[in-house]
Length: 141
Image 1: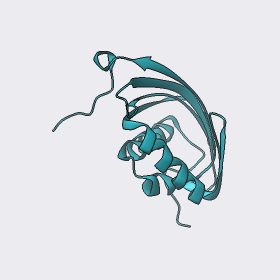
Image 2 (image 1 turned 30 degrees about the horizontal axis):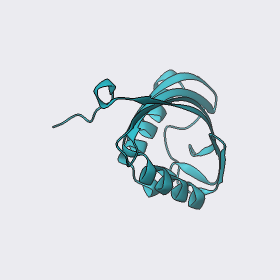
Image 3 (image 1 turned 180 degrees about the vertical axis):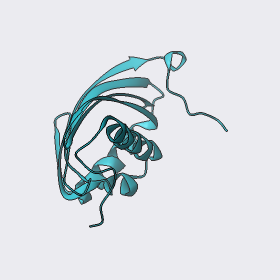
Image 4 (image 1 turned 90 degrees about the horizontal axis):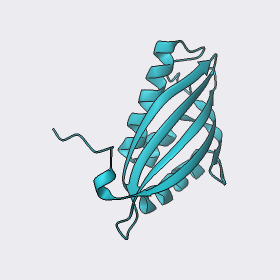
């Protein structure tokens, strides 16, 4: 596999780049694009679900974005050290009945030497909101 910069050990600037790249990829809602940032044998905990390997990442994300419609995410660097990054995030989405949610959480990431994410551990809570209470909207060109 080719290196996926920025590479660890992270600096403040490169940790922020990694977080922004993750935000951009997830907001694409393209499971195959997102999966390319992870090692072939990546391990996740997402809420109470455990995901192993890129193929399961793709299937997980397809299910997620089939259920979480008009998904929009914002990530913020929380801390970093060597090959690890912690982020806080919030995202908004609605279900097929039109109910909007804001989901809050934290993720802990660990990267391999080539810059691919080996481990992703996410804790997430969902808050029902009204459409009028949304904060995260797509910018229109």
